[in-house]
Amino acid sequence: MRFKRAFLARIGGLALAVGAASLLAGCEDSMTGSAMRAYYPVPPETLALMRNKDTSQNAPVLIRTYKKEAELEIWKMKADGHYTHLKTFPMCRWSGQLGPKVREGDRQVPEGFYSITPGQMNPNSAYYLSFNVGYPNALDRALGHTGGSIMVHGVCSSAGCFSMTDQQIAEIYALARDAFNGGQRAIQMQSYPFHMNAENMAKYRADPNIAFWKQLKEGSDNFEVTEAEVNVGVCDKHYIFNQTPAGNGRLEPTEPCPALKHDDTTWAQVEAKETEDGAKVAELVAQGVKPVHTVYADGGQHPSFANSNLPEVSRPDALAQGPVDIALDEGKGGKKKPVPPAVQLAQAKADAAKQTQAQLPAAPAKPETVAAYAPAPAEKSGGDSVLNRVMWWKSSDPQTTASTAAAASPADAAPAADAQPVNVPLPPRRQISQASATPADQH
Image (cartoon, rainbow, N blue to C red):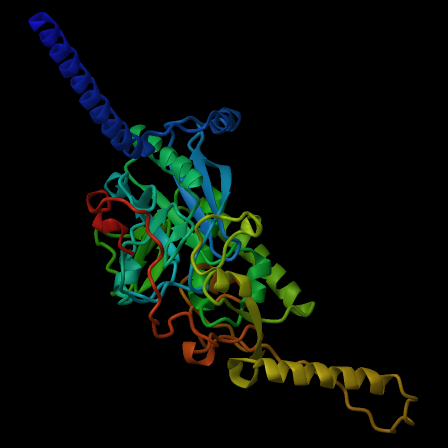
């Protein structure tokens, strides 16, 4: 009997030990599952794509994003040192308006050239995975722009960030992680309002942000002609690209630009591209492309997500409204003001009336005729950039030619991207322990 009791006690103790071990194992598995997100491998099909494009898993990465088109591009360096486009991820959510981020709480996704280092990677993000894009950069600080902790992250929710799906951010994070493991010290991220082509530059030629966007286009052109990471500097509160001080000095973001030197071959290639694009802009304007200012209720997302029934998405009511293009009036003196919808409707009615009138029998011709004429083009402004010297539509001065018109103050636009922030609830967060969310997630 005593032997039986001892045997049962040993069996009970063993069962208790096994039960405790299983509980510990379950806890460990849960923690490991969360931590392992940062170690997910790059998908086999993406690795095969790399081989087809003459690049490798640990080769350097470069990121380009476009708000209007809601796209995030991954570029990889090939064996010859030039970057090639690897793949494009449709962006699940971005917030705010087209235009740069100006202050904390404006919900703006920043635009410009940013740098991502290994220390900005966040494997314990409340948004599945994330990395900080590096806002504010030197130009943002020189202009007095405020705010911070702008991320590329999972969970389809944005209050100023580049939001992807969890599956997408797992792959993007893995691509950046492997590039850092291969020795890359910083990843350049180029954030644009839209694809910097002639069509968009013609369409947005009168937008209040056009002077800034022309700077971004110059940087984009430098990348596209060289297929290499752009050397970005800031002086006189402006970007400069692939240029360095001629002497031993250094660039100061708020000071006038010193004498600069550049590679003549690259400079000539950029000039040629900008001249070609300038001619296309002029052609589109001549064909009747009207200037507009695009207004969003609160950002957008890629059309591929329209009917995807995502479990989480921020402000679906704002997404449902979609963007609205407001016509801009290139009036006297180059002043540009949004045309209110009521005025647009009245204009449409007037145009219809004119068309009806044109169908009536013609009146007898008058003996006198008045010859139509086109006003002489205004004098070109003379800035320091490549585009200023070679194209009529390039100007860093908001008051430019009558053909292109100058950028009006934000007060003239409706509504401006840097309008006063409103009380908007933060995006939904995953239910995780407080310890797992780092301060870098607080955007």
